[in-house]
Image (cartoon, rainbow, N blue to C red; front, top):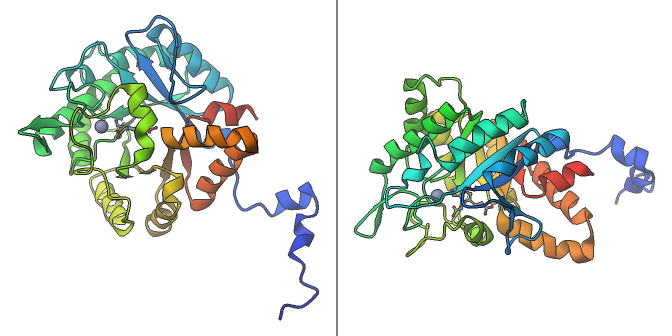
Length: 318
Ligand code: PBG
Ligand code: ZN
């Protein structure tokens, strides 16, 4: 039986003592803000499934970036909503595409802000899939060249970091080679290495209009029942040259974040996704702003260095 001298409550009795022994913390510098850029808009459009979040017109993204920078948020990750979609997702690698036009605006409005781009095709393909499609199948290897072209076009526009999210095998190697050959050997890759086929992406697909026209993404995104496979996926991406790895979604995968961090000891990001945001917004009505603090804190405690979160600006403000 524990001695009566031992009193864990002693260190909880004042804020000073609690702060002295806090094991983890969330600062603005740990947060990345996801930003939807919609080239069809002239004014911001509220996202119905994500109260408090907007799709932004090109003319306004600079202002949002400057606000993030002022609040001490070190980066944004961009998602594009193009005017037109086609089977090859050509808007994704068009030098005049929505992301390629957004990047210089962001760089001008907020020098020193990291501009991260999501590298995938699903927002740009008419069928809503992350790769080329033939006979009802998503083709792996023919998609890789397209991802490399997307990444290079983002680097040419001035992206700080590219973040491939398509979960095709060997995508990191293809993108690394593409960037190196195009003269961008120093552009780092943040790989969505352990990206699960999650129902928590629902609001995002509503916001970005990227819901697949048929089928689902279970043929390439990970099965939520698995964690060992996440270690394998992350290891492979690191071998292919990923500089940082991501686990996504975040709260349903705290065990995965912890195991990836403990096993591989590389920079780990976690994406608190759209469905988590929607769920936590509902919880905030009764739990107040601490709901956000606690959820972001849990992700940091699990081992994430960076958190991509729609709460980034709100959290940085406090
Ligand atoms: C795909 C992508 C998705 C998200 C980020 N990148 C959606 C998907 O895989 O269908 C989800 C982000 C979120 O839910 O907040 N480019
Ligand atoms: Zn995709």
